[in-house]
Amino acid sequence: MNGYELTRFFEAAPRWVWSAPQSQIYPTLRQMEQAGLIEGQKEIRGTKLKRTVYSITERGLEELRTWLGTDHAAAPVRDAFFLQALFFDMIEPDRAASVLKTYIAEQEQLIVEWRAHREALLAKNTDLLKERLKDRPPAEHDRIAKLKAHVFAGQIAVAQARADWARESLRLLADDV
Amino acid sequence: MNGYELTRFFEAAPRWVWSAPQSQIYPTLRQMEQAGLIEGQKEIRGTKLKRTVYSITERGLEELRTWLGTDHAAAPVRDAFFLQALFFDMIEPDRAASVLKTYIAEQEQLIVEWRAHREALLAKNTDLLKERLKDRPPAEHDRIAKLKAHVFAGQIAVAQARADWARESLRLLADDV
DNA sequence: CAAAACATGTAAAATGTTACATGATTGA
DNA sequence: TCAATCATGTAACATTTTACATGTTTTG
Image 1 (spheres, each protein chain N blue to C red):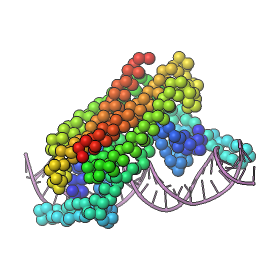
Image 2: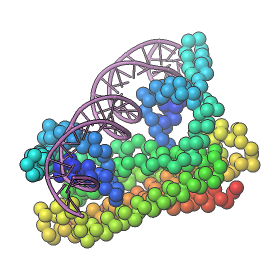
Image 3: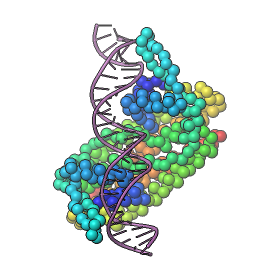
Image 4: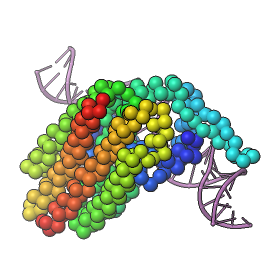
């Protein structure tokens, strides 16, 4: 991809397992190129509009595979929403309920998007997956699609757990007031 | 609390819903004091050892309550582990399985710690909760303890969903190799 | 021809991490 | 008296966010 495509990718509605703002893309691409992890191919569209399309190098693949096979320390816990919920006893139950309802709607939206993405992966019907499957033996295609789809099943399960929890919270708030 | 207590609090084993490294504590306390959200009371232990114990101000309480009652944009999605899992098809299934097992163990550890903390909250048996309940009518104590305990039930549910997902992943990896 | 999409950057500020640095007090 | 705990800071670096800035090409 080039910087613009990456930017759009991270901005896309069905939120990915990772995100990055536009301002990080170009500096990071240059850093990665200097580190020899990716290499850029300069192209010209029309007569003047330049773009640089990057692809991973042998060395980048190596690093990626090493990273994928290594245990990484869990990120520090910083869940602003649960922190907020921890002090719901300090505000009016109505206000807390309103915050919870917005949260539930958000989680449900994520579930819808991730479900769609999961289905698309199972049907081998996403651009990225098609690209990846090109250099893999057809016998493995099903397995790869299933593995990737399963990651989104995980995201869905977590969002589901959060939404369920928030619904229980609403009941708790209503119960004992 | 003073800076030292806050540091220890965030370092404590049963990981909280938030964390902060020691180096952030003191600058942040000073910023918050300048903003009028907290105020420090200087004390001397022994003859020379100075410490500053901070407490929230009226203005700080106000801001806190406003924050608690407001919808906040969800944090950008950045789940390194799910990102890792998304490319498990690129490495040997054995390696992927090993990473998954470590992850499961981590999540289970969190569940154990959070369960214990939840029980302690229900029994109104944590220092912080006791402190908070001091200026609340006794009739509300049960409700407050339940609400706070429920937050940890949520953390547990999410960790459970993650662990279950990881176990399914192990089965998926084993199945079709 | 105007708006939307394509394309790439930088600057300033805030935030977060890792490591270093120093000294006092308490309890075994 | 020595180790653990109490107590507070800073420096250097890396990362992230928000905003600004500019120009080209395609499409309706």
